[in-house]
Amino acid sequence: MRILRFLVIVAVVSALAWSWQRHAEQAQPWPAGESGQAAQGLPSFLPPEAVETLDLIARGGPFPYRQDGVVFQNRERLLPDAPRGTYHEYTVRTPGARDRGARRIITGGTPPVAYWYTDDHYRSFRRFEAHP
Image (cartoon, rainbow, N blue to C red; front, side):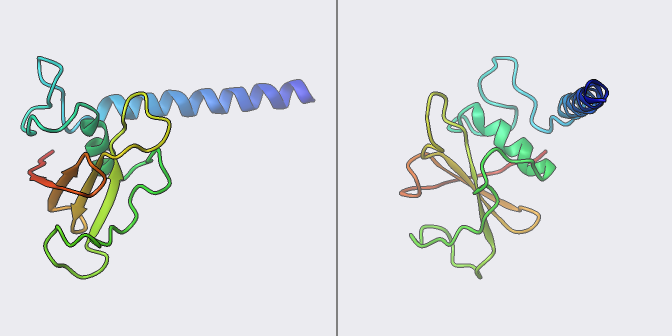
């Protein structure tokens, strides 16, 4: 009975992994440019990992960090004044970092209509356009 239960669990996990992989391959709204550097249509100041984050934002997740998608409060007042709940933050993975690092994408609106990038943990922001 234990072996049968184990085999069923393995089959379900395998099916989910296959489904996730297939979905990930089909959902690439920001394809990488030929150089492998910046994605087409995105500014060169964005690191390559930002494409992954933008893809997850466009798909609605799942996000790798539990803080991704939380309301960004704009305490620094560097973004335009807006009602609470307008801005949301998402982590841009930093290769080699043991924590979330300092890189974030902030979105404005639901669905997002404005995007900002910070690589210094909210000390400065650069606005950019992102069109899937």
